[in-house]
Amino acid sequence: MGSASPSAMTAAYSLERANDLYLKNKVTDLFSLKGRVTVITGGARGIGLALAFAVAEVGSDVAILDILDEPHEHFELLQKDYGVKVKLYKTDITQYPVLKASCDAVVRDFGRIDSLICAAGICPDEPFLERDPGAVSRTFSINVLGSYYASQCAAAQMVKQEPTEANPRGGSILMIASIAAYQASKMQYLSDYCASKGAILSLVRELGVELAERGIRVNSISPGYMMTDMTLSISDTRPALAQVFVTEPPMRRMGDRTDLKGAAVYLLSNASAYTTGEDILITGGMHAGRTHLQ
Image 1: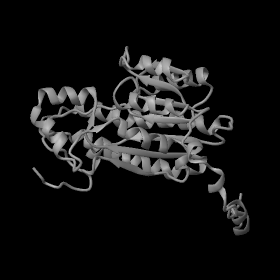
Image 2: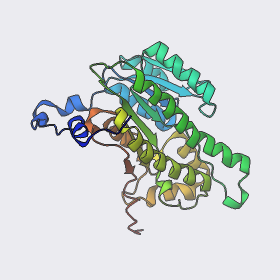
Image 3: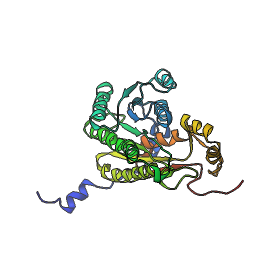
């Protein structure tokens, strides 16, 4: 078959002349996820669980994929307080056949997948010269391949499912990167974690371009120091590092997972309909610089 003529291509991508859509699209509607299904890897605790609450608060049903046998105690509140369907699936995101079976189960139970949040990850802290190859491989398997496999499973479903009023086409994928993809962390040795999160940024840009014509947007959030059960535990055992957490950001505090909720909803919803391949840094200003004040 020959290539399409210039006139045919022009017809296929003609300029939309409507210039008053901003009058019809209300902000409250743009940020709604009602009628949609959001899948979250690593959503049984930590940042993933906080973002599960975020999407539930704006109307999305929630399917959580996690390797944990038992979720955090707050998971029960998610199930009973928001009037949306919530279900937890035990899976292993590093094993594609296992993950694919879990995604198939989600589609059987929920009917579709409209959004994906890749929040599963680990952050080993050990000097580079002491890192064991097997441990490094595990970091990349979870942080990179897990996100890759989950995105592939979700995107494959997004392109073939029937349109709905809530989601006429495609979907949205949100990955969790890190400020560690941009700069080294003070008093921490995160070589494979930093490299894995740099890979996430590259993957987001590539998929943002590649999947755009399929109606799928792909973006990421790069948090700075965030307060979770894990970072609080680290702070208890390493008080000097706890001081880094609250003095390195110019805003002089750790981030709360609340600080990520609005950005996540924005990137999953129609509010960001013209945004793809983007990373939002939420670091208390640390990515911009330090004030060096005592």
